[in-house]
Length: 436
Image 1 (cartoon, one colour):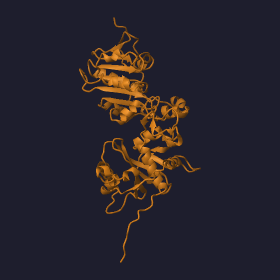
Image 2: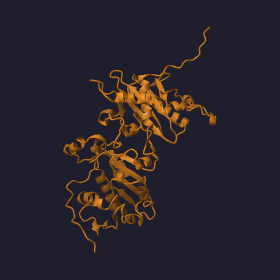
Image 3: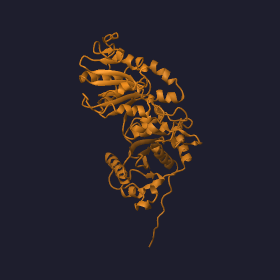
Image 4: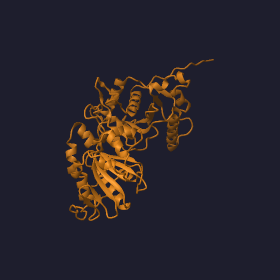
């Protein structure tokens, strides 16, 4: 006979999803997605409400709630589901194995320590709580259980929540490869948050403060840019005045992403703003250059600039972009950019000096605030800058790899080229001239 736990009373606080991030996460129809953010942002509640909504909407839907171990579900996801999510009488717990709905929908409870509970079934959806606990083999095992075979729902989903963790975490590599989409949630997205609940998070130190309060992906030890503070350095976008000095910096990549950053300097305060970011993998050099020129064209049009007036005073490029490609008989990448209307000059490639310039821009100088500000729309720079760690063999440099995996340093390299160029502009090119 089915066993039943005590039903919760009428919901004292109906669920309200604040913020576009949670709504976008619910509307997403890709197969793999993760709701990531600091502690106490309502991630688990949002995921459980979504699972419950699918079970109510689609009769006979099959869902699973999964954690690293089955026992850990009881005091976490299961308690939240019973106390806050399921309406009175809408589902019953059967032998502590699954919740059954009157319309035939089922939510299976399973841990990766009992894989037979997962491998024996196909699901419309799986919700993984605390995905940072899973290794790559466990995650990929779950992807084989949401293939759409026999699905009741018109789409299948493998969803998860997690706190930010080490930049080398396996799901971040899966994100970079385009297999999983991350949605970044903040404390403002939790309608129940209070100052009293935030106080213990603010009192954390080191990487725990960065992960659980600021929501940053940082290593447990060895964060390089310890001066970075999103509360100070990340700002909401605003129209850049036409008279401000502007320049760009580009780090090249094809298999790995290329990153193009646009900079502007306030002449009154000399604050430097990173106000635009282009970031993509799989684009050829001419496609990248065309994308850059298109954005600059649109920017000129928005400012109603006409004729030959220059909007950007300088375009700095990764020095590797100037190498001749004799083996394939192609012009240099920089010359391709030049042909598309982006006249690059090589950036200064002294890494240690470059990182010191970045750090100086991040810290205040006496009573003068720090000079660097980043528009909130530059998501990849904001995401990857705090993930950089110290090279264990040289504490003045960044590590090129973490646990054997290449670091995602494309945006910080572009930032370095841009800030060094602002501090020490390249010498003008010398050309021949004749008179008479």
